[in-house]
Amino acid sequence: MRATCWMGKGSIQVQQVPDPRILDDGDAIVRITATAICGSDLHLYNGFVPTMKSGDVLGHEFMGEVMEVGREVKNLKVGDRVVVPFPIACGACAMCRKSLFSLCENSNPNAWMAEKLWGYSPAGLFGYSHMLGGFPGGQAEYARVPFADVGPLRIPAGLPDEKVLFLSDILPTGYMGAEMCNIDKGDVIAVWGAGPVGLFAMKSAQLLGAERVIAIDRFPYRLQRAREISGAETLNYQEVDLHEALRELTGGRGPDACIDAVGLEAHMPGPLYAYDRVKQAVGLETDRTFALRQAILACRSGGTVSVIGVYGGFIDKFPMGAVVNRSLTIRSGQCHVQRYMKPLLERIEKGEIDPSVVISHRLRLDEAPHGYEMFLHKQDDCVKVVLRP
Ligand SMILES: [Zn+2]
Ligand SMILES: [Zn+2]
Picture 1 (spheres, rainbow, N blue to C red):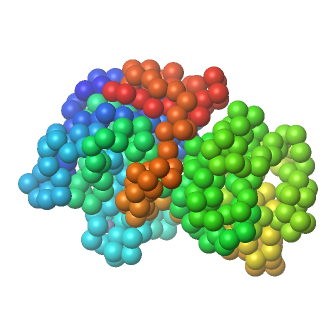
Picture 2: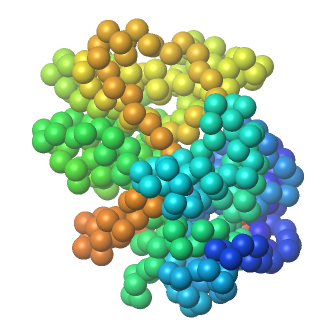
Picture 3: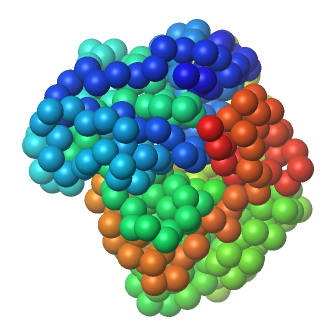
């Protein structure tokens, strides 16, 4: 089959690789009909995630048709149309029973690698380094899906791929980011990053009762999307003093909750950005954290900072004093996607949300390298790239 392969930092190629096959009685093989490039794939592309090997198949947002199932699979049959969540979860361990699916204790065969960095291992993920299981991803013609009875969600006929594909990651991730804010009626929620996850966090905040949503980014076309999709007020941090602007928009108090949908490659003007870049470049700091620092300092006292941008390792100049002295709550996590797929599918069916609005480019699988370049450099107003194998 053809698959999108990571060949080294900054190098992606679509190559011929062996077809996946059933390795475990609980597996399914899915023929992929739609897949997407995620912002977190750019961290792999840019070489920020350790334990990638040349030839690794990328992609953790995909859906398709079940072609084959292992002997023990009961909930799926050949021909079913499914969306596959990005964390791989067994459904039976202590974490899965608490619905903390991205923390599954049984799905990462390379748990020891993650334990070295993080103390304990989270779940295995599709197409996201050997430290997280080394599972081939879904930017390909076919994928092997372990624990097929637990993860994949069957999609009713009549819903096009583009409306449901993002149940695999970015819609639930954005939704969880908003849910972690414990939104009360009347709340003002500020979101750093108007990429696809940020846009869904804004829309979700609105669905969960926020009175106002403020979008923060530096690309006018992304801020425009934020206004269109969720009626957000927008701030371009290259044009305003962000802290002051947020204070002004919130009666001098700060947003009730701040969502960091940027993560480890944050870009910000000023000396701290240069400090982070230099330290990151020489390996003294793994993550650039400008968005997170700003979110913490901007949040109202007693408010919540919800972190859904991806961080990998260690951060520097973390304003812990603000967290403690102003009673801030920090919440975070890789999304427990399986928990949100069904309720969000219902919202899609009811027309409350149409995830396809974030799609800016539709490409063939063979054009994946071009898709990565375009998404990375924000060319042609790129917001979200969908690939068709
Ligand atoms: Zn993703
Ligand atoms: Zn589990």
